[in-house]
Image (cartoon, rainbow, N blue to C red):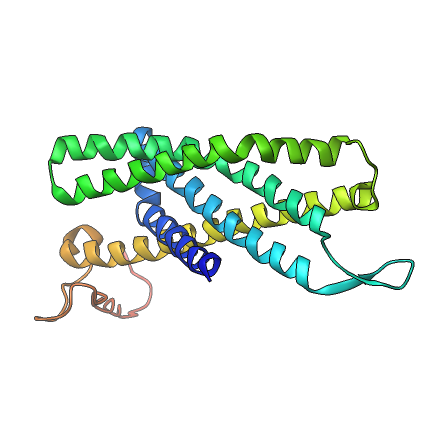
Length: 247
């Protein structure tokens, strides 16, 4: 139950991060500099969160659904217990370092915003980012050495040569991790581009309504919503009096 709650929370935070990046994606692209850098940090955090969620899904179904039969006719799962352990360790190593790098930049920026604005909401955001950063660092110090040793022994050989550590098992674990990472990146990209497109369209309608002279359109009817599309007067029809004659 706890894993399910953490999964839902992480998935929701990843969606929010991608949505927030999409709201300013176009503007930061043109502005460049720090706004663009921070937008990319948010995108990396979102992709890392989605990747973690997909790792949990693949690991769960790969360890409980029997889909393989070995030579003795015994049904097995897609991932053996050892492969599942290495799969989660490798996935953790893939996501933890981008999370630490982007999280550090986001935390420093949050404290800078709080120092300039001195608002309670900005302070709460900075405090949460600091707590998350401390938790991630402490988690990395505990788990990275063990996970690194586990992945190293599995892929580069250990004391025993069990059937779960053959080339087929190594390729399967690596392929599933790549699949989870690709899913996280593509999901983040889809959300960001979708939100950026809708935001640009809404802002375009807003500015066309507010400044009709610039966009050569007629103002809307009185009392209309600021998001309503402006009216366009049809072009007057020209009379066809035949070819002009010059004297």
